[in-house]
Image 1 (cartoon, helix red, strand yellow):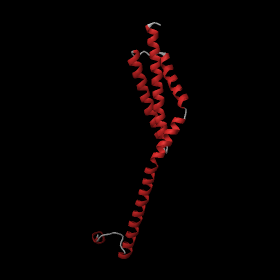
Image 2 (cartoon, helix red, strand yellow; image 1 turned 90 degrees about the vertical axis):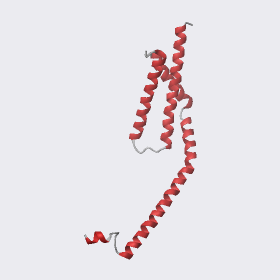
Image 3 (cartoon, rainbow, N blue to C red; image 1 turned 135 degrees about the vertical axis):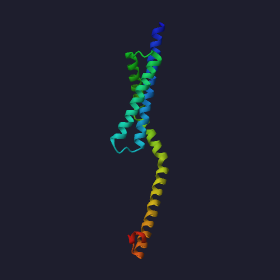
Length: 150
């Protein structure tokens, strides 16, 4: 094989590898979405925008470094093939497994937060009850003598 063909095969394989890396990065975002509840579309949109901007930078960087900025159709196809191979190889099981493991590891933290919230609500409830008892005895609502004379 000629040197040019060998170089093009290497460039295609590098494009495929970076396509797999970018697909893996998107799976990290998917795991994050399953672990952290998103209340609206805005956060998902923001995450996707950051991902696609970073992906565009990576694609530009790879194209610029390896091929002096010349875009070749087989390099774009290589990125797409790499991402497709990654998706076929991992499908959803990787995202499901990682999200389940992270959720399992977060169970003690979630329980601690729940008990802390219950403790705070109990403390606040006791404080409000004590404030009401003090108001009932004095008949005032927390006003000082200076505000009464004005």
